[in-house]
Amino acid sequence: MRRKESCNLSHLADKINFNCDDIDKAIQKISNGTAAGHDSIYIEHFKFAHPSVIYILKSIFNVFLSLGEVPQDFGLGLVSPIPKFSGSKRLVTVDEFREITLNVIPSKIFEHCLVPFLSNLITSPRQFGFKKGMGCCSSITEVRKVVQYFNKFGNTVSIACIDVKKAFDKANFWGILSMLQKDL
Image (cartoon, rainbow, N blue to C red; front, side):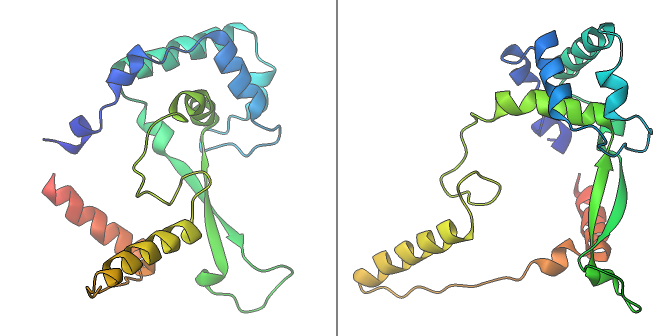
């Protein structure tokens, strides 16, 4: 099965249907002065536009939901380096910056519309990252409980730790991505 087909969420369209109020609330949540994406359209363009723009966005976003797809431009972004240090330096390396991606504003509006509908999705109890109220402490506590349980019954527990930092290195990322695309 193709990856795109396995990730199709069009079945959620039955449960999600945006109205003009949803779009307006999403627009108001985005702060003035938010950086524009590659299209150079700012949030103020939507905040000060004719009310018919909200209706048009509502219609377009509902089409996205019914098709289970969004435009490719929603995935494009401008990557901008942000220094991790304060002040100025003479010699800097790439590691002293973090990257942020500036997405197009309609993509941000669509995301703000979706969040209330997706916040109640059930996740695995074994997921600790990207979950409100969970983090490293939660996962460490869970590992400790598992080790104690098996030790209690006289079993040995082997634990392997992997440093995945290099997996997120840009050069490695493109290599891994190209390998994954070959599998599709």
